[in-house]
Length: 304
Ligand code: GLU
Image (cartoon, rainbow, N blue to C red; front, side, top):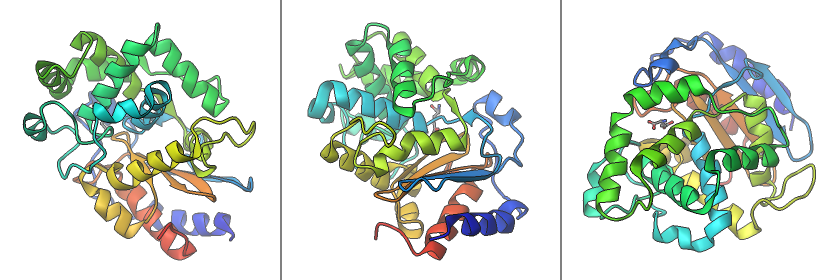
């Protein structure tokens, strides 16, 4: 399969289409990003890698970082983690408070803001220097020591993240947050501020296409069963309230972020990252979704 020609072709086709989306203005710093950015990078198991457009420019990966936090927490506490967060799609938006009341502070899944806040709490309880140890972990799985949090983005979100403050305090009221909400939120906002390019993202996530093993070193990040579970969660819960539609149209496990990035995994084949900052009404990159739909349709490769 010649992914390069296909990616080039779809990129040219979509590059200048009318994009009805909007950048995520609720985090002021994100609305300053040039909305015309559009980049794609694929990293494959057989090492035929390719990028086009703004594939080398760093952007705020936002919720995509929730997958990395989950992976580290899963490595540390194992299946105990599922007592604190569920594995069900929520059918509500990523920052919703409503289900938490009925579910007594147990978020439906780790990719909702509520779920990632609980995962952040677990990491804080288990790590001595949570922010340093987390970024070291991310650097180690990507083999890239240049990965960083963005203090600008984190600060911007700290100033305006009222719903996340509400979520964390609400969960704490059910006894499901162990640490001080301010500490948990401080970690959570830094987590969401991680910056990467499409190239860095697809290289990092390739281990999930390789049964949990880092490609270059063959080091096990997750065992086969854990890797399968993370992919399953990305498949069912990775796109907020549009996860069903992503499975329907694209047919791959993946995760989006409000910075306009999407990572998608084809087990045993590749990891592909797309970035275009304008979001559709559900909070997912408008062009990113379109690109991946066309990519899996025309390559006739999906997990279904
Ligand atoms: N930092 C964002 C928030 O908490 C993450 C949401 C996202 O990317 O979906 O609202």
